[in-house]
Image (cartoon, rainbow, N blue to C red; front, side, top):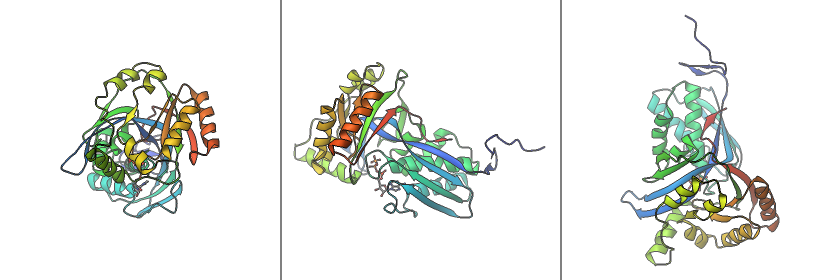
Length: 316
Ligand code: ATP
């Protein structure tokens, strides 16, 4: 019997003959509740992840070895060796599926490095999805998310995308069922990154010295707001326990946050461990206007508009 070829050049058992292109979004945390430090060195998290329309793109082609090239954000700065999360993800999938980790991978990066937008985790998720299609390993999304959890706390979310609750160290994902609404964001990208472990250490220090804000607590108000369509209601419920730490490490971010709100954003928060700041706006036109004002004010390297939620790592 002849093999059934899929229209995109994939064969169910042998994988793709042509290139596989995967697009993966950045994430922001609409709520980032940081609990106590665990024995394993991670903090207990209670977070609402939200995937936004700033994308990295990973193309996978057949090859005789495993090799990575890149262009865009972080080129020349980011190592392309075994420390890169793309390479680590390819090895992890190959080990799990019992195949040789051979592929030529090319990363087009638009998500800034160490920006609090989980760019590295996004690339790991993209590599799992791309190599799964290239090698024809045919894993389910849940199986890929299982491998993803060992690569980093944010990686499982980027396999799924959308808006989701993350618990544990952030790797245990449950989708949030919300009304189909698009929220409009301005993403203010700073010069240089902030280290995520350093931001957690700074939060511990602020908490030990009694200088941190009260912890956020429950996600109920935010989950309630997501069920409505009013960005003004959502704006009142956004929060990030790591914001104090990011502001202590990068005091200039306070000016960025003020400038966004002065330009008419409903609210602004630091994204994850920073230094990117994200602003919720009333609609797409408002987001464009505020992004232009922020860029002109010189309070960030670049301000981009984005919407969310969007899907996670996907072929196509
Ligand atoms: P998070 O929001 O998950 O804390 P982040 O957005 O602050 O992450 P990333 O861009 O994900 O930061 O990168 C954090 C570090 O991970 C980088 O400084 C780099 O050393 C390492 N890394 C490894 N592979 C990658 C990759 N493909 N892209 C970006 N960073 C990578």
